[in-house]
Image 1 (cartoon, one colour):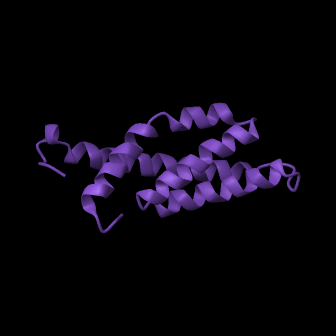
Image 2 (cartoon, rainbow, N blue to C red):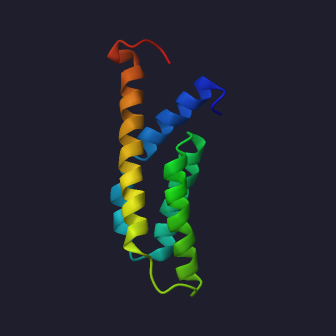
Length: 112
């Protein structure tokens, strides 16, 4: 997708719009391992689609730990995995939103 700028921009716009409230929904899901894993999986996939490798990897690490916990192979999920994902999400989403806003026709930056 990265070699198709128009498609990538479309995916970036969808990422910005669809994940604007993701952090709040994710925080609300903590404690329900199945729901949290579902939210983290969606983020991992979307991040990979727009080339946000660090975010995708942070989500994959948390998702793997949640799967282990659900299978009875881990007693808990380290807070550090959630903190890492949260920091990566905030940075990535903010950067994506700023880029999307700067490139929007209303900003005077022209078309994508």
